[in-house]
Length: 448
Image (cartoon, rainbow, N blue to C red; front, side):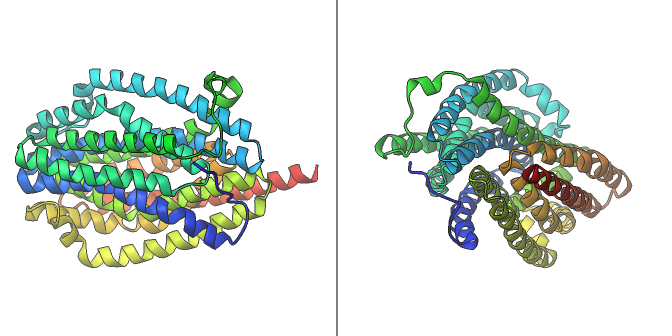
C-alpha cells in the first residue's frame, strides 16, 4: 500500500487518475443495490421488490454514515502525508481500527434489536413488512463486514491510492450478482436471498483486501503502539468525520422521509420511489466521486500548504459535475419511464417512477456543485460547514416541499422530485457564501 503524492503535477491529470478508479468503485458499489433490485424483480412480485428497495435504502443510509465517518481517516492521513509526517499517518490508521471496531459492533447489536420498529417507522406497506424485516435483520448482523470494507478503502484513499478499493469492490460485486441468482433464483429465498448475496460479496471483498495488505509492502509502518487510543488523533478523525457522517445521515433520513411519504400513498408509489432512488444512485456517481476526489486531493494540498491548488481542484471538479448533470438530465427527460421499467414489469410503477425521475434528475446538476464545495470543506478540516449547510437546506426546503407535494399532488410524483432539486439550489447559495467567508478568514490568518 504505497502512498501517492497528490500535491504536484497537472491538477487535471491528478483528478482524472484519482477520480476514475473512484468512479468505477462507486459504480460497482451502486450496482450492488441495482443487482438486488433487478434480480428480485425477475423472480418475485412487487411486494418483494418493495421490501428490498426499502431495506436497501435503510442500509444505504447506514453505509453513507460509516463512509462519512471514515472520511475523517482519509483526511487525517492525507494531511499527514502532505506535511511529510508519516508517524501521524500511522497513528491515524491504528486509531481508526480501534474506533471503527467499537462503532461496528455497537451498531450491529443495537440495530438488530430494533429492526421491527425501524420497519414500522418507515410506514412499510403491509404486504412488504416481513420481507423488509428479514432483509434488514440479516444486513444489520453483517454491519462489521460493511464497516471493514469502507474503513480499508478510506485508508487506501487517504494514501492517494484509489485503485485498490475499486478492485476490492469489483470482486464483491461479481460475487454478489452470482450469489443473488443462486439465493433468489435457484433457492427462491426472496428478500433474504438478496441480503445473503450482499453480505457474502462484502465478506469476499474484505478477505481480498486483507490479503492485499499482507502481501504488498506498505509505505507506512504500523506497530502495536499505533493501536493505542490517542485523544489527539482520535479527536482529529472524529472532528472531520462526525460532521460528514451526520450530514450524510441527515440527508439520507430526509430521503427516507420522502420514501415514507410515498409509502403512505400505496405499494406502487413506494416501489416507484425505491426504483428511482437506485437509478439516481447511478447518476450521482460522478458528483459523489468528485466530492471524494476533491476531499482527498485538498487534504494533501492543505497539509502541504498549497491552498491555491486545493481551490483549483474544487473549481475543476465543479466543471465536471455540472457537465455530467446536464447530460444526465437531457437523457432522463426523454427516457425516464423506460429506465424505471427495467426494474419493474408494472406499468403503474414505470409511469409513477418516470414522473418522479423527471423532477429529481435536475438535482444531478445542482447537487454536483454543492458536493464539490462539501469535498473542499472536508479536505481543509471544515466539514462542520457542510453539516450546517445541509441542515438548513434540508429542514428549510427539501422536507417541507416534499411533504406539501405528496399531499397536494396525489396523482403525480413529479413535484416530489422537484423538491429535492430546489433544496440543492439553496445549498449552492449557502456554500458559495461559506466559501467566500472561509477565503477571507484564511487571507487574514496568512497576513497576521
